Image (cartoon, rainbow, N blue to C red; front, side, top):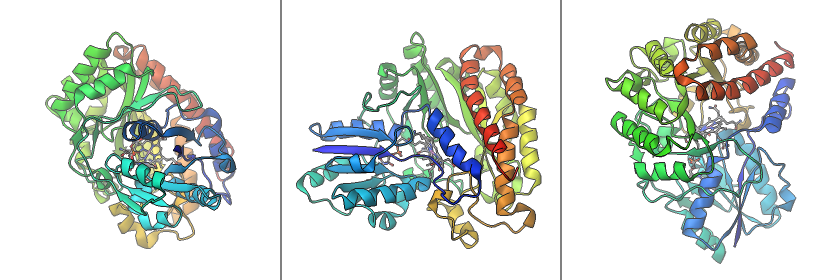
Length: 456
Ligand code: B12
């Protein structure tokens, strides 16, 4: 049996967009490409090999390769679906099925809305794949696919290794994950709903072996929170990574909370994180507006001294990118400038996204009355506005324009240069190298988007 697994493009796909710049955003993403090999594709390929070794696997990253839907030949085609990719995935699945191919859909979006997805697929994998992918492949082979396969939340032991060498384009970065689940309950986040509030850890030795034997030298740890899953375990993981990798020159980046850094073992955590190769942490600062942080139930993961936490991280030679959400119903026009000010004060990169109530989250229920009905899932990509705001100064157009302004300002050449200069010697040279690799293309893209934007 032959299967093809597809990761859909992250492009805009809003055909009638009045914002020319958004079409450009799509082009920029395609031409420069994401540096990371799609984690889910390589992982599902590894899982397939483990549960059905006789199956032929083809992987397509439609973010990098032009997909000719009419040329796909397989007994089963699988697509992985995040919310902004739902429209493209459903359209592609419809074409494939009209050609007589069998299609299975999986991922966050279809797990929340399995009935919606089933209208475009022969089967839907709801939740995690490990417990059901073998059955699904067996059923497909016999021509007896079931409509739904419900994957449970199994312990993360004896997992498949991501399978390398099947993707057609080159990537700078590989990925690994060490745990699933998150202890926090931020209202906008899909993760604790999907993976649960209880954290499941992979055995440390499995993670270390996987990273050590991977051909990549730069990794994205795709855990939702690299150290929020328990400080003692995180320190142990970093020590083991350090001992195994110190001669290998392997480096990694990931997302982490700020409260863990304020723990009594915080300094130790950072010391070993850096020694193990961590060069950049993406922290969920989320907002400068306390009303919004309260509305989103996002205060707990910040801790009492979040500015100090950022300074501590930087002092250890680890660079910081603040992830922010802006344009929420409690946000004000002043919040855009305040966001820029805090980045300048702390000398960190900022990655602001439009507040987006993803289906299945508590925020989706709260914002339901305000959603803009004509804005479908393709708008749920963190760039576009999908709900109304009571303040006329926070119109849809103004919030989209303000986000582009903020991103371009935050990545001006002067700011990038100053930030690179502010990284301590402890981080030399890899933190500087990683930071420049990230900041320079981001800055170029954001400034170019602003120039092409008729509203700015
Ligand atoms: C890495 C990552 C990215 C990378 C992706 C890199 C790549 N090339 O693929 C990048 C940076 C590009 C990215 C971008 C975005 N991301 Co992102 N990302 C993640 C992250 C951290 C890890 C995902 C991952 O790869 N996990 C590892 C793989 C192995 O696991 P998995 O995907 O969960 O898959 C399992 C199951 O879902 C299932 N499965 C999944 N697909 C399929 C398909 C089939 C056929 C089958 C059988 C099974 C199956 O099987 C797997 C094993 O059990 C998650 C957070 C998280 N902890 O999950 C957020 C997350 C997926 N991202 C999210 C979002 C919102 C985005 C953005 C919209 C940006 C934003 N924050 O606003 C953009 C999308 C841009 C766009 N326009 O489409 C949300 C998704 C919400 C939703 N409802 O869709 C998440 C959950 C973050 C969150 N906290 O809410 N992201």
